[in-house]
Length: 72
Image 1 (tube, rainbow, N blue to C red):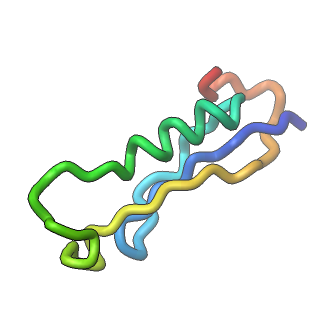
Image 2 (cartoon, rainbow, N blue to C red):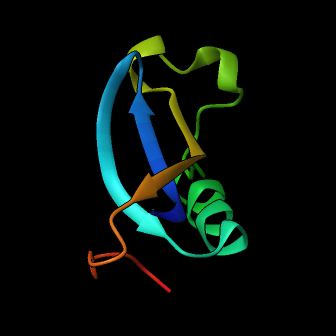
């Protein structure tokens, strides 16, 4: 088995993506940090509706070494 990092993205309580695998934790965390950035005139994160709040994190997982669909 090959250890990689799975990027999980949530919007509100719904998982909207859990199919991006990264060989490097640093690269996975870079995408996680940039996916959840917000640009707009919210004034505060507290004024953002709960269903629009996003979370992204990297989870270590094992995949078959024959799989080639992961980011390097």
